[in-house]
Length: 84
Image (tube, rainbow, N blue to C red; front, side):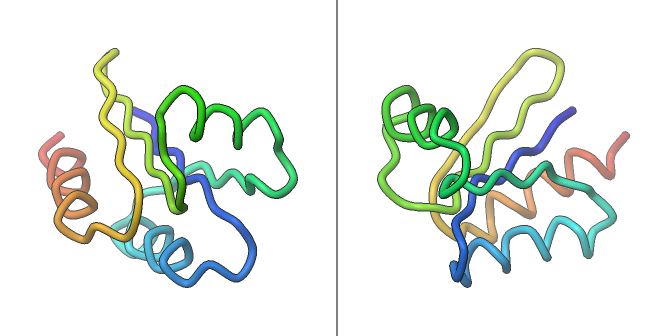
């Protein structure tokens, strides 16, 4: 299982997304798109998103991703991880 959160400096929804995962005991990988041009290309060109945070959740080869602060999606991932 991997959780990657693509962020940029000063992004409150980004901070809240990371904090929600951390509070649940999960440690997401945090990637700052302002210092990682390939990451910016990935979320815009490959995934098609224009805003951060972008969360990519990969479990057992199945990937889910979304953009923006989405507490329902975050909670879904937390529940999936707590079930194991």
